Length: 172
Image (cartoon, rainbow, N blue to C red; front, top):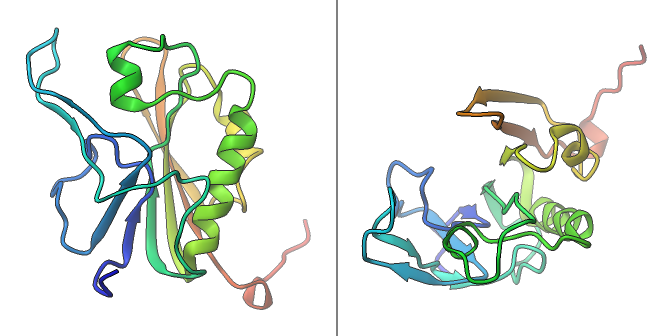
């Protein structure tokens, strides 16, 4: 793998959050591929084409490989098997979503170098932020909430992988 690929998008989907959908320093992975080039409703030209087909729960990279890891994981469990939204965004298993997300978060943490940044984007339409936070490998430094249409909200969580011997613990 090229050394200049020091950013990992661990669930790239259609790369919708990216300004440059082919950023030269980013490795885009996803466990699925999908292409929809005909207009369907308000969406058209949907392409899920990762550089590598890989599951974020089992990353085939050495420890501390990336400086920045970003992830917009699936956040819905109630999508049908053949629906467009499942194809576009993926779907969490109704029973195992906690274990799946925990494994994915731990893998992303493993491949993140010391002092590296992990950004996780989440929409709490079905699974609330408070439930998600229980699965994180560390406490987020901060988050940014953006209200969406209807009842849903999106939040970005930001982490820095600070080595344990450098952490300063403050007792309250």
